[in-house]
Image 1 (spheres, rainbow, N blue to C red):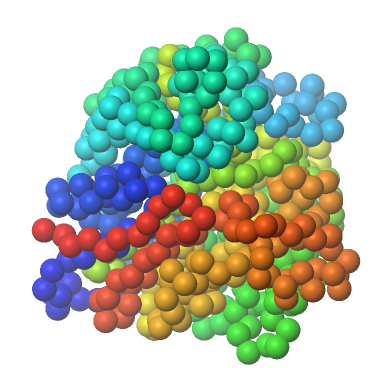
Image 2: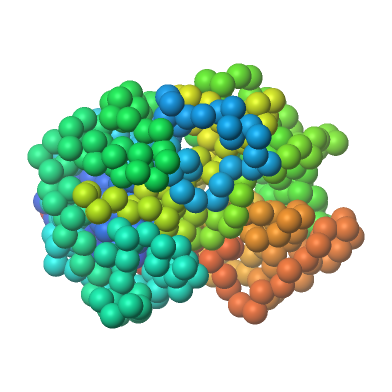
Length: 513
């Protein structure tokens, strides 16, 4: 959009949910890095300071826009091990919420390598070394991490690796402000700084596979070696005069595209009611249709047009996805925009921390369906239905990078902010601070599909009541309503950004040297 020759100095905007991520991004920019490097530096730091939401033991999905090039999707979602006992799991109503059987091969590091190859200037050694230093020196436990430790205290006490990192040494667990020191993770990150491929061959996967084997997992080192990040064309759509890009299945980007017509209907007096109805329909269709194209046909058309009767199907997910994810967004005034999401799925993932590597392992496999007929069925080498939903949008006025935490509710969260964020005169921080609603079932702690409403979401509550949809009101802003991160590059070269007040982060616009 902008000719770099017309600007006197390059600037880079970054938004992330923790200050340490912004510090890492600033260090990368000061070293000559671009928006790709800033995003990767922030992402690496977050795996140390936000281990309840992301780690190098989780997955990654991203979109990268480079000037003069098509938008590219990076999908680094790990698969179930080759030796998974599908027959035994098929006898169960649903996947376990945590434990070794919920661990799929972690895709984060392979995803970083794929993103770096799309335009990074600095490589991964510097951000991984910075992250290793954070792990070795220690960081204060943030408010968000402290909340997560409290919510998951029983699970943390149940795993020796977790207690070794998050225990206070006196039978309790760390609290807000306490130092979080992770020496085993620091050693692993140092090893990866020398060779990121070591995540998938050698000591690191051998240690993880051995620990999972002790806990009943079927993982082998070969499962790790087989992992590849996919660099693919995104799903693209023009809605409301705006071009939108999302990642394809097995992740749920197409679900957002399916509800954008209602989300962008700015002049409709009953816009909220129509959006709540569309969200409810889309949630039912998504839970029935989303899966891995490797395992069979996925009905993308049904998710793009969820206004039919839909099929309810069996809920494939188990437990709550509170605090599941981090999003990092970055934009360079040369036209580069990156939106990157990485995750351990549910809080502290599988509840397993491998002591040999210091890595918290995700429970993304809990999203599989145990029904062999479901598109999201579990199987050797298959990836579970995925929640990660990075977005890039473009108008004549600006390019928008957008992502959020929020589990299965990410489409509904982003739909509520997208309409105003594509308006060039909107204050992005004000937009992200508004009350929101989400719709979900087990992912939000409810057996039936329920609308969860923050104070101020009265129109959504009224619409849910008319639809016969149960409502749960909250006392204030909640993590379930998402941690949105956004950057915007305006047609005149101006940059702005915002970080959701529900998280611990901030947004900055950095001057490049």
